[in-house]
Length: 171
Image (cartoon, rainbow, N blue to C red; front, side, top):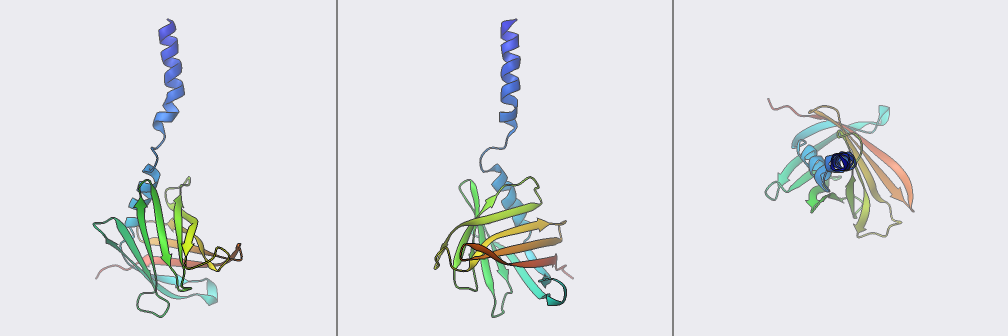
């Protein structure tokens, strides 16, 4: 009887632990979600009367180990971000028009359709310099994504850049 009670107690205690995702599983799932962006997208940057047309293209490279995002390809404002796994973490480096390269790390959340990246470090900059500090991707179906980029300057949040993109369908 004691063995049965002890076994049931152990199962009750261990069940939540065994059902939790292993370290890195959430990041791997987030990277898999990011890879669904492969292709060309069109939309807007900004909101209301201040909005302007914007484009972004996603492609895989490095045996599908890195996702390259090219925002405003071919324009004077072209910027590139590269997303990849670093062991159990999903990270990205943003090659910004400001001439710096902030690196951000995926932060798991409660909603698998909302992916949040936050600043870890940067090159060609001091932490107080203006830089992109975080980005949130909200997936609204397979053909619609909203990206909100948050800048920082002087250690404080600055402007947000909101991009609303729809996948370009092949004709």
